[in-house]
Length: 188
Image (cartoon, rainbow, N blue to C red; front, side, top):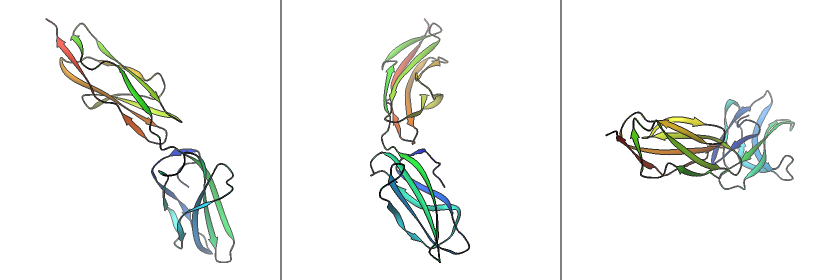
């Protein structure tokens, strides 16, 4: 069953798995809050088609409260017997908070005197930051997966450049910083 157990999910999720068997009648998917839900909410309708490692249902989690949920697949046979498989997932629809703290917009550097530009970022997430990507002139130049989320860009040419960063959380939500312009001047 996908998503993977204890993974972070957001937005529209494709649930993939197996729902088949010799005396197969139908399957259904449901979710409930916490590890051992008191109540289950069905996702979609009962499905009378067998599925072999394919999409079972689409689950829009964008409007449900964030937190831990149990996701349960029930396969019902014609004689009324059933099999169940349950996994837990964490719903996280909140993107990371991000601030590109350095360099300041309009910063100037001298090609040949300055070897690099420090790029400093402050990132927070309500659950977990997955990675921060660093871009110079819209080209990815580095990825950081652990704090502190700072890097340096080695100056390779004079001229104007733009720097921005994108932070992703474990559920795939992302936040992009505004672009900062820097100027690398030729040495006189």
